[in-house]
Length: 435
Ligand code: DLL
Image 1 (cartoon, helix red, strand yellow):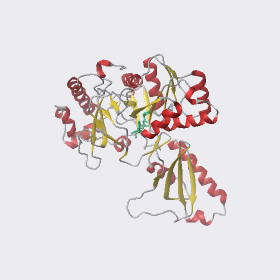
Image 2: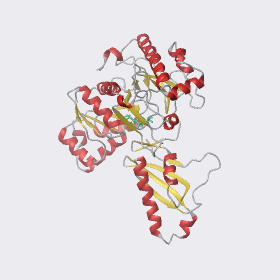
Image 3: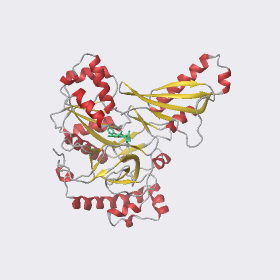
Image 4: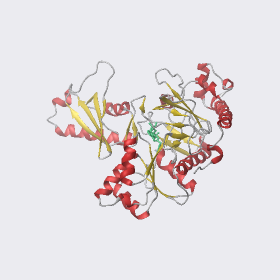
């Protein structure tokens, strides 16, 4: 089934004509409304008139996450705030998070694209959708919610957490589809089993999983324990949120990218060179219909590759492979994006600790855990008969990490000069998760 047959099955040359028209408009608009882009293009010696073919996009400079941070919070918006009807943001200490805005039409587009995803998963207005993505600044909850409403399905706005209650609702309301992170799906299955619930007997038929990396092995496990079809959904706040790309039930091999709204490239993350389809590299997106927060050649840091072969579902939209890694050090912990530098910034605000730390990430019972080992200062250590002082430091770090970054961490204070030092590039993160 296809939600918007007109746009999802366009012959490639018609799609490309549409893309070029929209690209020209977007590049013109950002040049005239976003000071940042005017400067960026001027410095690179390009003007909107340089876009004559889709290939000309290559001549334009990249936009990076650092650019977004430098323009925190609203500096990259292309419309006045009076036209912005929604804001979302990634977690982070002030100045480090990324804030995104939407006009009414952006919300409308987003709702349609998520509706396309749900239909690609075989859902109709007769389905009941249990939405366990977090509601709030994170785009997952509201993104899926609006898409489900657009489709006309019945949506249960569960949000994350409260796992036992989720299981009761799964039993009592009989949803036919579930949306959450893949690790949370496994966690729900396990908790349900512990509660004595036959998770295979639930009415669930399909799951729409994303927001964090997962493997085929995890897919098989989820499909086994919940007896459902598990599909991959991709997106990022900067580009829109969930619904940038989605697997279809028929193909289940790569996610169709909604190319009538987003242009995609893969690049060599070291050199920035554009790679041919099929070759693994970093995904770069350009939005061509967004009003409030358009982005030109945004480097996602997500590693994947593009498939251009036709898919048996009939969509002519190219597909991207599952995300195989990142070209930076971003971690996704229980669905929350965290950079080691953000943890460092929090630690540096705490008196009595040194900027020597290690981060250990593991997955236990399908839940990610983060341990922060950090050295205390000589002085604190010398006075450490004051066990209370240490406990207070520990508590303060746990609280600040939760407050600023939205993740729960275990903190272990260690003696001065006990953590490994690095001669070259520091490798402070040990990610022991096997996904
Ligand atoms: O995670 C949007 C989303 C919500 C997608 C719900 C899917 C479902 P951010 O919080 O901005 O947005 O995080 C974006 O998450 O750059 C990827 O690294 C990662 N990611 C998202 N979807 C997938 C996926 C949402 N299907 C970042 N597989 C992205 C692997 C994913 N990684």
